[in-house]
Image 1: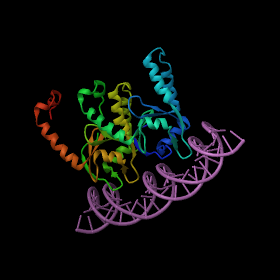
Image 2: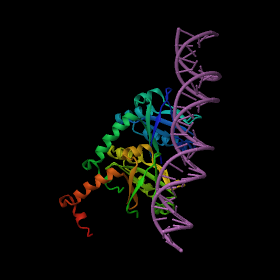
Image 3: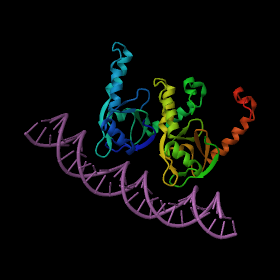
Image 4: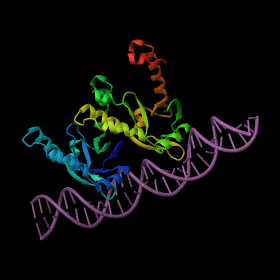
Length: 151
Length: 151
DNA sequence: CACAATTTCCCACTTTTATCCACAATTAGA
DNA sequence: TCTAATTGTGGATAAAAGTGGGAAATTGTG
């Protein structure tokens, strides 16, 4: 499971150093071969090890193609999915289109989310996080399922 | 079960000495491998032995990922969860982002809470404790379940 | 086909992190 | 109360990771 939050500076060429603690696992899992796509709910990016992505892609591709919403999801997710390799210095190069979508400039935040990672611009993340915290304290908004977890 | 309250000075590098009385147990339970994340209700941190954390993480990860509220909780809890190891001198290094979240500077309070520990800045803890005491004396705020406990 | 622009690869430098060690403070025992 | 053992604290140093930039290779274009 990927977990935890890492702030990473993207350089002028759009290169992003993957935290060293993740590299070994990524090398094992997928030989450093990742897929980056957009998160359709937030202005952020999703980063999958190739093996995990393939599972997701199959599910998306299997959606009924006569369903308009399904086709939209397919266009968005598969359409933006970019193959990306970890280079000799542990960095990936993010396609300009994806950088733009997520508003990435220099300061970014890479967040472990179980089987995948999420990538945010630092500013966007900090703003969004405050909203989340407010909502997490509003019990009326939480489902029973969530309330039942005893931390 | 962890119980009791310990005041600990964090050093300039963000290192925190785990009370000696906990060390042996933590070595047995999880080989000194801990996970620290944020408490979403208070500006404090939760410290879990790895084995306990894994139980929690599974429950959180199992929430339906198409539910926005669930995804927010996942982002907050799993996203801030940091692996941390007890070093040769019995200390852990707290990631800067978590220190910031809980407003930890130097004086901190580590509080035993059953299967986990909570970490507060001393000032924040003392303020919050007073609030709790006031509320606990206001019987109208207590649920039947709480009232029924015979101390 | 030549040239420009972009991308990829590689190397060197800087910064950060981890590990180790030494000493101070505290506690427990005699 | 003194001594010994354990715990707390700070810092030095070696290793690793992060960062930037230049040259070579590739691609696109006139």
